[in-house]
Image (cartoon, rainbow, N blue to C red; front, top):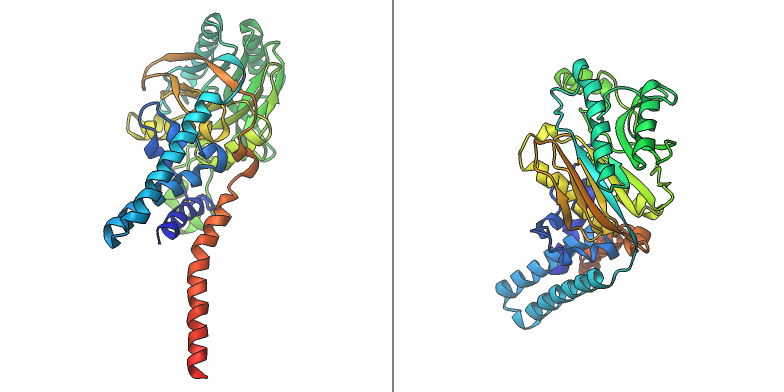
Length: 393
């Protein structure tokens, strides 16, 4: 029973990620992020976030089973042993995981909320402010600098005035610059991070893969326009955005870099795909001003810490109004802003020397959990059927 319960819960967590209605906001792994002690989460770099959920439920269920059914002699040593083994493995991983050099990164927070940054008067001012903040961060030693999601609130194309301006910012700063903006797609706009190398080259644009339903697109638009018209009117844009379809991982010359935008960071598969493509650092651009200063700010930031641990890579998180942060490859926050202030978060981070096991295995552990859930009732059903058959004979 404890093993079946521990297997069922992660399967539920996975199931809610499979449809546009599911938002995996409250993973059990988040409960382990009190402060910067992350050793209990480190085995997720082996088997992923669902393994962490499995362990949490299993240790709890074994303890409850011991109390309820008087099986302390078996269940309590097993629960204690699992907890101790997981903790020891985490401490060893933190102590002995090799690095492949380091980089100083910066996350910019211009403090432009969603209620003001779309105004025509604020658009040019925001771009200029982020340019100034970029120069200041570069002067402080930052080699890679991230702007928030849609810091540039209009379409940017190659050769346009804004493109030339952003290129000059990267070239004059001598840093890799990831600027949040829009780009035109085949049938609409795309939410992107435009990446510029220190020589001013626009090397790639990461396109947001997981769009927010009723925020950036209307799912089943024809149905909702007829059945619930008000839902189609709350989207922030007149037309649906186009989602991306790849990791767009790129080589900056000193490191291999992956990107995420906003809600991308709460879906572990998207970060894992970047890790599988060789990303040694993740640049995360987001707009959390919709959350004001609620606890949702901290919950969303915590998700990026899970992604850092699972893939063994640092995460540089830039938010319009906060929280902006730099997290190391063990999920520890080493630089963080307050919400609703203008801030630049700059910190040095170590790069990983190799990929995590999870980046290779993915969520294959779910197949084992499914078997644990399915086999006992199937075995019992077969035994029952056999007994009934023998009784009839």
